[in-house]
Length: 236
Image 1: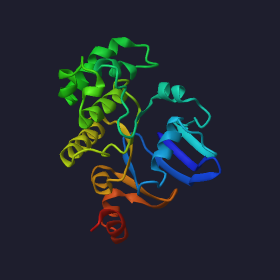
Image 2 (image 1 turned 90 degrees about the vertical axis):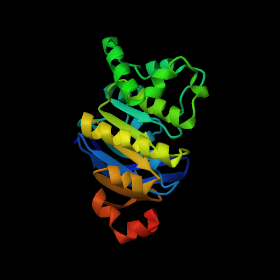
Image 3 (image 1 turned 120 degrees about the vertical axis):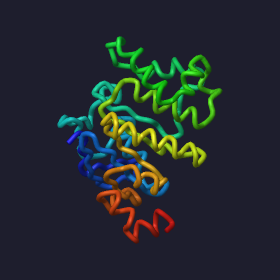
């Protein structure tokens, strides 16, 4: 098991946002957590990355307990986050943003090879490598955020609401890239999304989060046909 979360609780002041959530991700899996806005999905990813503290519970990565580990230490261990709404560094160029993703990686001999691979995934980034990130479209910034997370060759990629603010055509393209990364590169991905149908279509297993609690879990193809999921989350 690459990632194992047990009885995770997250609070902001006196308000508990996540109530004892437990789930796991095996090496090589693409797992999704779906749910409405405000369900606690992003809080879970931020807790795994170490950006928000957990009130209690366990987070184990590669069998090691990381709950009290600093975010930069988790990054060095092989976890990377694609944040909600891209959140690139607007005043840095595309190339400078990508190099930020190499933080904590001492073997820079891999940089050229990784850049070549990323430019093959996202050709527009090669064309815009000298431009400030602020000049990119929303879809291009999302591609840059994914590439910045991938350049360090992570063991676990956390993807937060990658479809938010994107046109349907771009959403399809980004989800296709994530699916190819999982299938062809064997990259382990934990995806949290409001776009339930797209998430269920590309993931192996899924968890359904409601107001900070997991209400359903199972194989994505089975959940996609569940009448309760279809009515509440797929609009079918």
